[in-house]
Each structure stands twice: as structure tokens, then as C-alpha cells.
Image 1 (tube, rainbow, N blue to C red):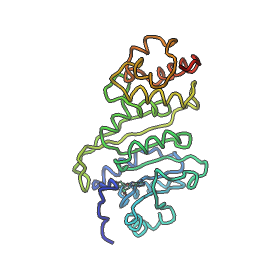
Image 2 (image 1 turned 120 degrees about the horizontal axis):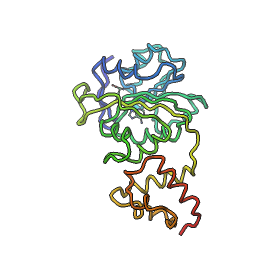
Image 3 (image 1 turned 180 degrees about the vertical axis):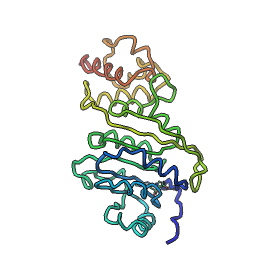
Length: 261
Ligand code: SAH
């Protein structure tokens, strides 16, 4: 069967470099249990993951042509190919309530949505190894105080230890993307629940970064909370200056002020 024709609207950039594919697969810990690969395409990573003999390995691919290709070239994968959209996938279908780790050279057009889905399902996802466009990888791995620190850096770093592993050049893909790529690894930490209301925490982080040039005094106005009991160290700061622990502290103060305006 001929190679899959790359479709731009599906973010298809096929990795050509076997060494990089091997390196990505090897970056996933061996004891992570069930594994799901998002967007296997023609299986350049898949074959190395298959070598690792994870107990229950699934791939999810939205492109019918790629699904056919995988079925022909990797017979051992045949009953473990899920044809569909990861963003719409009901995770309990594949793994019920068991945990599973995620790996992939992800479609860059839906990077943030994949990361939000990981955040929402973090109690089922002990580890993630993934290639993203370099800016997204850097943003996720960024620490407070940096200009690129953002919503996903704060939210994910609450529950995951995040490592930037390595940068990947455009020319190892077919077709080459316009930007560089990078591989990151997220390992679930021990945090089970936040010391504050999580929904409010997410709203506070989003409100802060949606107007990231403003001080939090102004950026948080949209939440309609009374800010009288919030110390100046928060109100005079901008979102990018706060660590995730400080965002939690700030959320607790808002929660306890209990006097919505
Ligand atoms: N892992 C392969 C392909 C990377 S390109 C490689 O490294 O060569 C990204 C892949 O994600 C493509 O195969 C594309 O069809 C698939 N994809 C795009 N959107 C998807 C979605 N919503 N759910 C599952 N797979 C998706």
C-alpha cells in the first residue's frame, strides 16, 4: 500500500527520522501501564511503542486512510486501532476507569485542546510524552516570571512535573511544518485535590491571563468578586508573575471573601 497522502486540515506532518521516533518512544517510562497513542499516522512511533510490549496499547486516529495503512502494516495492532477524534473520545470506552498514559506526535492544530483534555482527565493519566510545536512545548514547560508562561503552564504544573526534553527540526518531517517542534514529558505528581475550589481556580487563572498585560486588580474585575480582602502583592502583580501555588492562595482568598459584588 502506498504512503498516506498528507492532509493539511488534519495537521499531518509525518516524521521521517527513525532515530527521533525511537527517542520519543523511549522517553515514555516502561511501567506506565496502558498506553494510548494519539494520531499515529503511518506508525513511525507506533512500531517502537509496540516493541515496548505495554499490556494494553491503543492508538486513536481520525484519518481513515491512515487507519487502513496501520491495519495493513501492523497486524498486531489490528483490534487496537480506534478510528475517531481524540477530542470527542469517551475515555471510559477504551480504558473504563483504568489509568493510561498518552504518547504522540500530536496534530498541532489541536494542541491546546489535547492539553486541556489531559488536564480534565489527569486522574486517569499518569504520564504524557508528546511532540508539539516548539512554542507550545515551551509555554507548557515555562515557569512563572517568564513572558511565555500562560494558562496551560499554570493548570498543568499543578498536577504534573513537566520536562522539556528536546527540540526537533522542521526538516525531519514530510511535509515540513513552518515551525520547529519539541518533545515534552509530563509526570503526574501526588496532588489529589486542590486546597481551593477548582472551578474558581481555573476561572481566576483564565481571567488573569486573558488580560495578561493588566494588573490582577484589573484583570480579575470580570469575575465580579469583591477584591477588598486581597493583598496588594496579588492585586499589583500580573498573572505571569504568580506561581501555581500563589494562584491557589489567591483563589482561597476570593472564595473566603464570600461577598460577590
Ligand atoms: N504520529 C505520526 C503522525 C503525526 S501527524 C508521525 O509522527 O508521523 C498528526 C496525526 O494526527 C495525523 O495522522 C492526523 O491524521 C492525526 N489526527 C489529527 N487530528 C486528530 C484527532 N482529532 N484525533 C486523532 N487523530 C488526529
